[in-house]
Length: 139
Image 1 (spheres, rainbow, N blue to C red):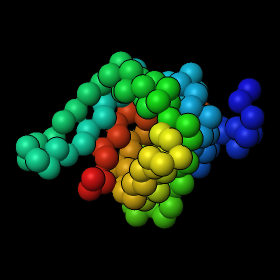
Image 2 (tube, rainbow, N blue to C red):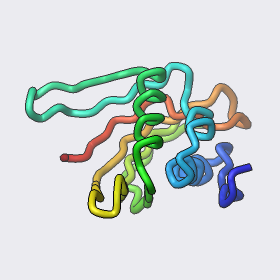
Image 3 (cartoon, rainbow, N blue to C red):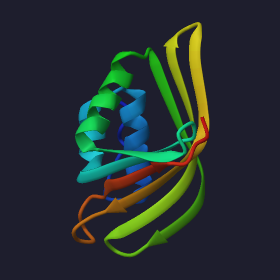
Image 4 (cartoon, helix red, strand yellow):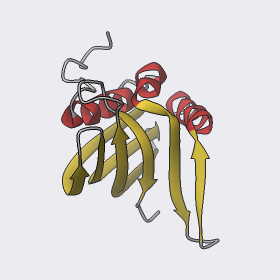
């Protein structure tokens, strides 16, 4: 087990957010990959082109692996939940976050934004998986 992941339990929504935070903190692609549904889709707005850009699970894993390999530290803080909509097997949560990425001591990026996450599971006792992540941050 990765140290500091005791609160990481994808059977609850709070737990999956904690798993997400821990995966970034420890730059653990295995833990991160376990959170993503096989049909995972990431969506963000390219404001320069005025279009939404999407990619699937394999591109997300490749991108995240690159991020984890090229940083010294990543600190993800989940802030207030703006909205939720749920039933027993699907939940959408819009939550603000602060992401600090340390590439080098003199190259630090800080992003404040919103993640619009759709979670799903086959049955009410199963762990949640992230089906869709729409980044609603303005870079």
